Amino acid sequence: MSDSIVIIPTYNEKENIEKIINAIFALEKEFDILVIDDGSPDGTASIVKSLQRTFPGRLNIVERQGKLGLGTAYIAGFKWSLEHGYEYIFEMDADFSHNPADLPRLYNACCNEGSDVAIGSRYVTGVNVVNWPISRVLMSYFASVYVRLITGMNVKDTTAGFKCYRREVLETINLDAIQFKGYAFQIEMKFTAWKLGFSLKEVPIIFINRVEGVSKMSGGIFGEALFGVIKLKWDSVFRKKK
Image (cartoon, rainbow, N blue to C red):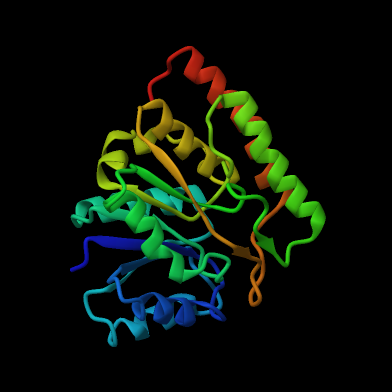
């Protein structure tokens, strides 16, 4: 068993899932994988289960009924990973917008450079986004500026979903108290870790918009992030326990 596991939430990712699994397992550094599938009607889970015969013990799947939200998928994955003894726990998309080759760099930031949370950052060295319309780039970039202004958290890419956590971080956070399911989930996890005194390090990556499959982004998810940040800050000021 590896000391590291990559959690990949999926909903209708049949075009990408086998490729991303093979790409991760081809890395020199060994990572295990946990797929959290929300009842994909396109057969994503069946593809994963067929690959388990090729990668026994390294490829795992949790199947859930219906679309229950990105945040709850990751929470389920965090709890599973902690129960199974992993020291380094990663979040990653299935669609190659996050490059598997960057996983060892995030691992190194936590394992060898002393960070508690490593963030694959699109904005720490400028704007490193490929194939997004300019309107979406601007929306994402200024959302992170907005989050920094409201929270005081010195993170350039506050909505990033490519991350590595040291085990201690996820053991310390009250995962059952995490409120948000969409974009705001990513902000809330960073903010909560930061408020608890953990160190966050941004590792520059190039984010490439998906080539295959359908984006799950929506205006509602983005709106949750904008208004959720105010609630997070309000709650933290009044010291509500996380």
